Image (tube, rainbow, N blue to C red; front, side, top):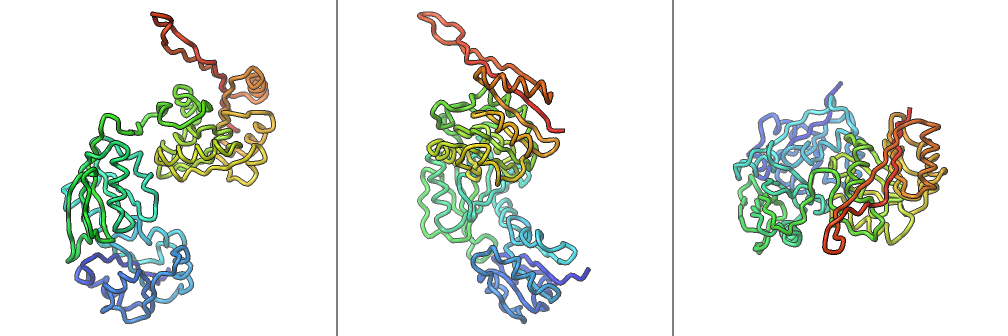
Length: 402
C-alpha cells in the first residue's frame, strides 16, 4: 500500500530539532497541513502549498482525505499520537498509508525538566476540555502533567485546586517548552499570581490535600455526602453492591434508568474515566439538572443525561452493555431494557416496594438470574444509648441476557 501521508512532529525548536528524514518529507510534500504556528516554524522547508487547518477542526480529516494519493504532509505538535492529530487521522486512514516521525511530546519534555518518571505520572489534556476531568486524579501524593488551553489555563487550574482543598499543591508552569522562549516557574495553587503566561504551556501538579479536600476515592460506594441529592439516591452500601453486580468492563455503556442523583452512572464512569460511557435517564427536570452538577463535581462531566420517561425515552439511545433500574421499574421498562440489551449484557434492578419486588420475583421465575436481599443497619442513638436502625431492605434481581 503506498504511503502517501507523512505526519511529522515538530517542537518549539522548529526545524533545528527535525531529523534529515523529517525535513525531506516536508520538502517533498505537494501540500503541507498544520496549525499556523507549525507552518510558520517549518516555512523555510515547505515547497508545496501550505494549508492551515480548517475551522472548526472537525473537518480536518476530510480535508486531508480529499487529497488521498498525492504526497501530503501533516505537521503536528511533538508526538502526533499523544493527544495529537495523528490519533484523529488514524481513525480514517490505514496506518500502512502513513509515515509518522514523532518528536518529543510536551509530556516527555516536562517530565525531563522536573525529573518525574512518566510511567508514574498521570498525563492529562485540558485543551478544549473541562477542567473537571482532573478531579478523579487528584489523589494525595500523585504527580500530574496537564496540557492547558491558553494563557489563563494555569490560573483556572489553580483556582479549581484551591476551591476543592488542594491549594497547597505545588504547581510548575512550563511555557514554550523545548524552544528558545522556554520558561519554568513554580508556586502553589493558593499563591498562584503569574502574569503574561505563554499560550503554549503545560502544568506539573504535585498533589497535596487538606483535611477537607474533596478526594474521590478509588473504590465503589462513594460516601453519599459527595452527591447533591433530595433523598432519591442509591445509598453507598447498596450502590457498591449494585456496581459489583453490573460488573463494568472497559469501554462499556450503561443505561441508568430512573437515575435520581445519577450516583450509579457516575460511579460506573469513574471505574475507568477515559473509556467508560453512561446515559442517565431521569424524568424530572430538577433531578436531571442535579445529575449534571454531580457529574461535573465528581469529574465525569461527559455523562449523557436524557430527560424523559422510560420506556419512551430509551428508543433513540445506543445499545447498552448493562442496564440499571433503580427507580420507576415496571413491566414495560423491564421489557424494553431486556429487549435492547446486547447478548451477554447485564441487567440489575433494585426494588424497595412490595409491588416492584413481586415484579422482579416473577421475572426471576420466568427468566432466571440471581435474586439478592440487601439489608443494611446502622448504629444510631437510642435515648442515651446506641442501637441498630435498619434501612428499608432492597431486593435486587440480576440477569445476564443469553
